[in-house]
Image 1 (cartoon, rainbow, N blue to C red):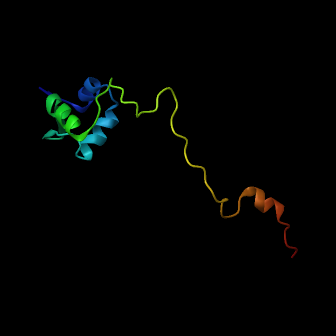
Image 2 (image 1 turned 180 degrees about the horizontal axis):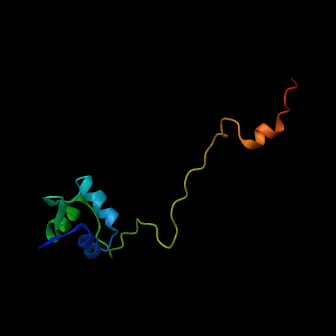
Image 3 (image 1 turned 120 degrees about the vertical axis):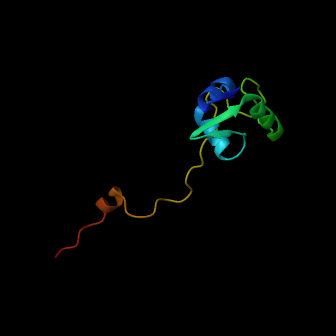
Length: 95
């Protein structure tokens, strides 16, 4: 049975953008009918197993849970260019 991207996302318990990203990068197989992308659930699950993807509901311990995501790197150098604070500190030239 062929499913749409929205139906596949519901079956796999992932967001639809995850499904779209996966078929655009070629990670899951799809069939195209005119402008529609259709997916065979069994073929998608087989491809996910072959490629090492985990299905929703399985805990492999590699994902951040409970809001414990990795912090983003902080910029190491000061901002270049003039900001409002640095312009206010410089005296104006007299004409």
